[in-house]
Length: 72
Image (cartoon, rainbow, N blue to C red):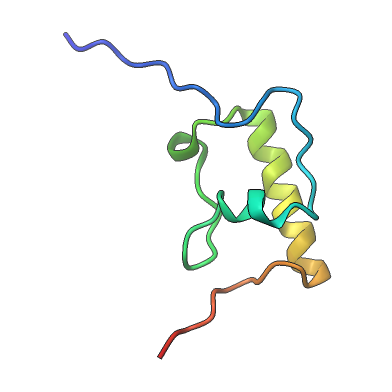
């Protein structure tokens, strides 16, 4: 029987997730602009909800794209 490796969150538990921190938000989105799941990133449920809200807020304000630009 294989042991499951406990995942460590890439963020600190008390780290502030802000909509203005675009470099942090980019690390939680794919190349196409989709938000990456908790299972893939290893963050907690509360952190994932904060990330989701920050990305959506940045998109509405025009700081973060809804869809990645196509490169032809």
